[in-house]
Length: 96
Image (cartoon, rainbow, N blue to C red; front, side):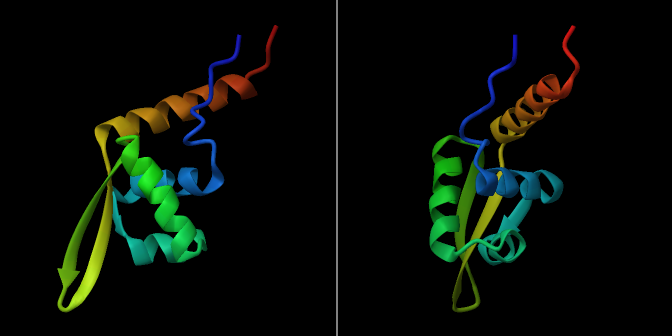
């Protein structure tokens, strides 16, 4: 009947993170925080969940003396996002 929605992407913040990364392919933590309006703690938890699922890759480095956390979407993350969008479209299509 209806396609199953990915529960990992069905969270507003995680969906926002993935959506931003689909468009940009990579973003640093500060940028994600500003664009989502999330607190640092909440964003950190949600980024970790997406990373654990293999949807994003988190790279830690330094910009000068300051730590820099960069998130990049993976092929698996792109596929999960595409599947999620298709499942949503299925919900929105009129049923006979």
